Length: 297
Ligand code: HSE
Image (tube, rainbow, N blue to C red):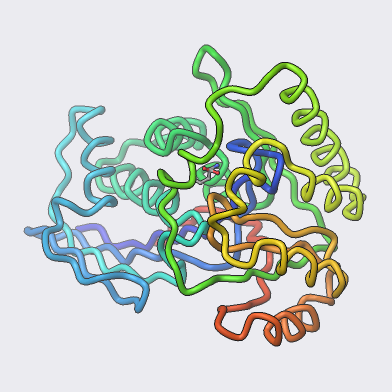
């Protein structure tokens, strides 16, 4: 009878102009404690998670079952106790973490020996884009692209010298709703300006020029201008964080949380100052998780 734990970090997608492509893993975790036994049972032990009424409707179970069926395997029964520090529907990649948890659960229970590439592929198929799945799987900041033939290319980087300050409001925003606000098409001029901004942001991140990266993050033309209206205090947060020394502040994933990139060692101060501006928010210092998905036996 197997007994193991799976831990997966939260993630913040987009990094501004890296829409659906760039993302970073954060040091908040979804953790599953799994014990194989006759019957299925899923228990939640987190203030962020509602109680489980029917395990067959659970995203983690459904994902695990989908993967098992793909390999003509049957999932053995098990008890899964789930802990999580990742709030739901706040732009912190909770669904990508859950999808990866389901993939890894099937991998372990059915001895599938999946490669990281396969996990990324299956996770992206379910999520629709790799910007959260890739960093949650690999850790670090990951830039990824799904090509027309369905292959997902990615590059992981672990830039030093950065801390993050996250601003989580007490409201949810569903990704589907936030995606409907983004136009389906852009003119050639718009697309070339938007991708130029994205290119410079990525180049600046990779060369450690965070001041330039931060300026480019705040000039996104792919999604932020269309979503700003549904992100509480969008301009106020950007303006104040910049005044307090942030390199740049973006919508975390599809929102409603926002996240600032700040110089290493400045996180606590920026966090304290921003708490005064955002008294009804959960404001916290986060770090980039470098490890990604982990299994312990
Ligand atoms: N890239 C996604 C979006 C992240 O912005 O809609 C949320 O799933």
